[in-house]
Image 1 (cartoon, rainbow, N blue to C red):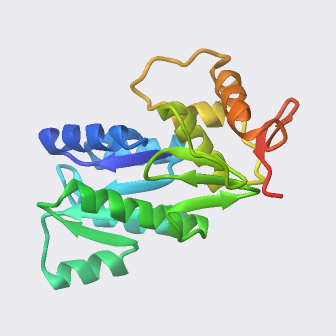
Image 2 (image 1 turned 60 degrees about the horizontal axis):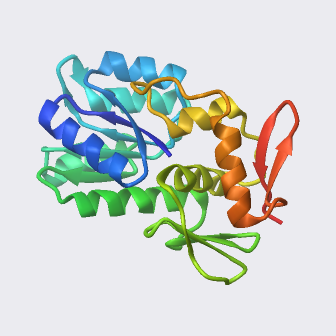
Length: 221
């Protein structure tokens, strides 16, 4: 899943990006409101992590603007502002969760997973759709109650995204966008086909359908 991180502290941003990537997320980093606005206008994100004090303005003002524009993605505020009044202002301003600095990476990851589960409507640690069980914590999959099969990082990210958006047609371009962050080199044109083929070897051929000229669909029934 592709996340937007808005953080201007270089050391913290680098640490967060590494942590999130290690846990299967793709991350685009913005260090100012201007960059964040530009990215939100051109990219699709599943969730945003938002600092409040930026060099060119208030992250809370940006969040309020996003909500007025109809952006409904979950937003986690990550800030040093730790009074109860600050938390109320942040949550009433459109945030879905509020975490103060310093924080433990484990808590941040748990909060992100909870927000994403809530957004998908599945509150379990495991996604179960059409006989496919995906263990998000351990990055493995089971078919019809069978043995767990370990997934590679890219296989996991692709399957997780498809299962969080079942019965939707996803183009190759959209899937590549979710798998790779902006700073990475362009992916090979056939990358999606390769990993769809690998997932079908795990799941069977009928779970992920090809819509010719459109993309791929994870079938929920």
